[in-house]
Structure formats: C-alpha cells, structure tokens
Amino acid sequence: MDKIVNRKQQLRLFLTELISFMVIFSILGLIIFARFQQSTYANIDKGLEQRAAIVSKKPMLMDRPSDFKTITIYYDKNGKILNRDSLQRFSASILKVKGQTKDLNKTFSKQVGKATMRGVYVKVNADTQRHRLPAGVEKRNNIKNNDFLKNAKYAMVLQNITPDLQGINRFKNLLLAALILFGVLVFIISYIVSRINMKPVLKAWQQQQDFVDSAAHEIRTPLTIIQNQLEGLMTKPNDTIKDQIDPIIMSLSEIRRLNGLTSDMLTLARANSNAIAIKKTSVVVPEFMSEVLDPYQEFVQSEDKQFVIKTETTQSVMLDTKRIHQLLVILLDNAAKYTMPGDTITVRTVIENNSLKIQVMDTGQGISDANKKRIFDRFYREERSGNKETGGNGLGLAIAAWIIKAHNGRIKVTDNPGGGSIFTVVLPIK
Ligand code: ADP
Image (cartoon, rainbow, N blue to C red; front, side):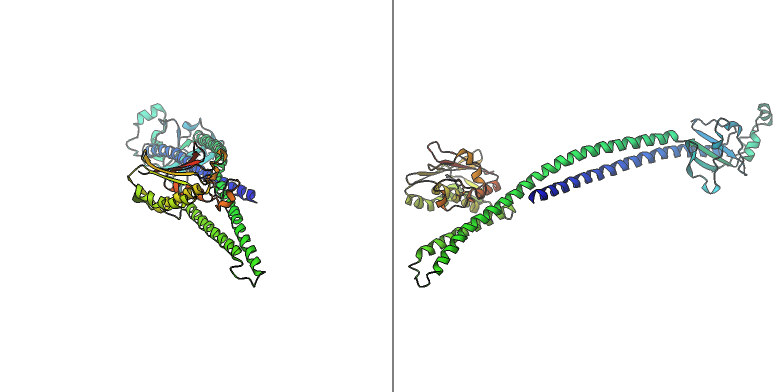
C-alpha cells in the first residue's frame, strides 16, 4: 500500500515538473519564433513600402531597382500591363498577379507556382512634366516613355520571399529540434529531481509511520497491565484497599508512565510541526546550573553514587532556560538510570570557542558503538538486561536532540575512558 502511494506521489511530482518545464520551454520557443517571423516580415514589408513610395512618384519604364530583389509591374487605368517588355525574363504567372483597388497600399502574400511572392499595390501619381523626355531623345531611343508616364495609373511591387520563408522554416526546425532535445533532458532531470525531492518526503513518511507504530506499542503495554490489575480487583469485591495495595500501586505507576509518555510524545509532535518557539533569555551560567543540578545532588547521593559539579565559567549566556533545563534533566535522569551504586556522575560546564559546552559524564554501563547514533532515534532503547526496569520510553534523547537542534547546537556521545559514557552538548552563544 505504502509503495503504491509513494510511487503515485513520485509520478505526480515527476509529471508536474516535466509539464511545467515543457510549458515554459514551449512558450519561450513560441515567443522566439514569433519574434523572428515578425521581424523577417517587417524587414521585407519595409523594403517593399520604400520601393512602392519611389515607384508611385517616379515611375520608370526601364525599371532597374537598385536592390534587384523587387519587380515592378505598371498598369494603365484598365489594368493593362504597360511595361511587359522589361518583364520578359519573369514567368508569365507572375504577371497574372492582380491587385485590387480596395487593397491599395496593403502588403499581401501570394503563391505563384513554387514561389511565394509578397507585394504591395499602389496608385501612381507621377509628375508627368518633370519626367517627360524631350521628344528627340524619345524618338532616338525608341522608347515610349512619355506615353507610359501618361497612362501609368497603378503599380505593383513584388518580391520573391521564398528564400526568406525557407529561412523561417529552417529556424522553426532548429527550434523544434532544440525543444525535443530539451524535452529529453528535462525528462531525465525531472525524473532525477523528483526522486531526490521524494527522499525526504519518504523518510518523513516512514518516520511518522514508525512513530505511530512504536507509540501504539508503548501505550498498549501499560494499558494491558492496568486492565489486568483492575480485572483482578473485580474478582475480590470484599477485599479492602489495604489488602490490594500492590495492584493499585502498580496501576498508578503505569498511569504515571503513560502520563510521561503522552507529554513526551506531545513535545515531539509539537517540535516537529515547529509549534514550539525558542525563547532565549540571558542567564548567569553558574546560577542556572546550580538551580538545575542542586535538586539532583541529594537524589544521586541517596542512590550511593557520587555527584560532581564543575562549573568553570561565571559568564552570562542567552538560552531558552526552560528547554535547556529539560535537556539537562533528560541527560541527568539517564546518567542516574544507567549507573549503579558506587558510580560517579560529573557535570562539567565551560565556555569554549564562543560556545557553552556542557558535559554529563558517568561511570555506568556505557553505550555500544553501534548504538551511539541510534539512541537519539525516537523510542530507541538499548536491549540490555536491566534497561527494562528503568521505566524509560526511549523518547528522552530524541527530545534532547530536538532542543539542541533548535539552539543550533550539537550533541555527541563518547565513551568515558574509565567506563561509562560522556554526553557532550555544545551550544553557540553568539
Ligand atoms: P530512555 O527513556 O530509554 O532512557 P532515552 O532516549 O533517554 O530513552 O535513551 C535511549 C537509550 O539510550 C536508553 O534506552 C539507553 O539504552 C541509552 N542511554 C541513554 N543514556 C545513557 C547513559 N548515560 N548510559 C548508558 N546508556 C544510556
């Protein structure tokens, strides 16, 4: 079931990334292509319009446009071509392109055979006096310029834009190829990214699942004990409380355990959802330490253990006193739980490298190397004879780790050279 959910989530993530990338690339490609096409046409049209402006004012019978790209066809008022002689080298179909008076001065495209022509149809307003040739010159050269000037009423400027269209097409193909290549790249990248992105999600999911499993397990044991004890009491309705004091004490102790467990779970759940804010205040280190440690002195000594306090600083630091107090209680409780009479518990506090360093050292049972990392996991407890009776729930160090993380600090556990363990907490104070 979980696998299917995970696969579905990953697929959704992958598709979302892929589609978003492709949409962005396609829009980008479309914009680039449209701009290219638009600027190509704008250039052609500009040339045509400039040529048309010249042609309409200064029509020329022997038309040799300076750019050699355009052809000009002149018509009389009935649409008859006037410069047919000078157009002999062009195919007859070009001469069939007809202009419409209603489309005057508007550029248009027309397919002529295999070529695409772009053109503009204009009215000719020739200054017939200025361009008129002296009669002698006209006759000598056998040209009918003066007739032409008189009759020319319309002109069409045409340009073969097939090469430009081929250029646009080539650009389109290049863009398409680039899009496909990007598509493949995006496909691969999206797949890798979705896998990377899913990892923390999957981890969190798994952690949550494990947390719920372990929590249910932890809660069930005390509940079963309480149920059994109460059912046992029900079978002896005539007994006094004094007669049944043992099951009552056991039930109360399990209820206490449940209480501790739920408050620990609540702390972790809130920590996880960032619902607990860290409130730092300035504290004088020795004052704060003795406030936390003094109550332990008597308790530890009552268990025939030694308690040594080494506070090697008098400085003030910024801390969330409530949370750091909670952290020290967790470490001290553990030190007390996992030591035997005759052992020593030492708490050393110093300022080193702009950090407050607190070490809780004990000469107790120690922690195996394999478990040094795992003890900070939720509900993780070392499987050892005796550990069961300590009444822990395996959440203490997980809470400690969260408090330290919230202070941007570090915690590590090492072996005490003489046996036992050293928990070192480093909290930056700047
Ligand atoms: P617990 O409630 O079981 O003490 P913790 O999260 O505080 O839960 O600790 C996790 C485990 O780490 C403990 O079950 C114990 O096995 C080990 N541990 C913690 N502190 C010590 C210590 N000072 N000495 C030996 N083992 C320890």
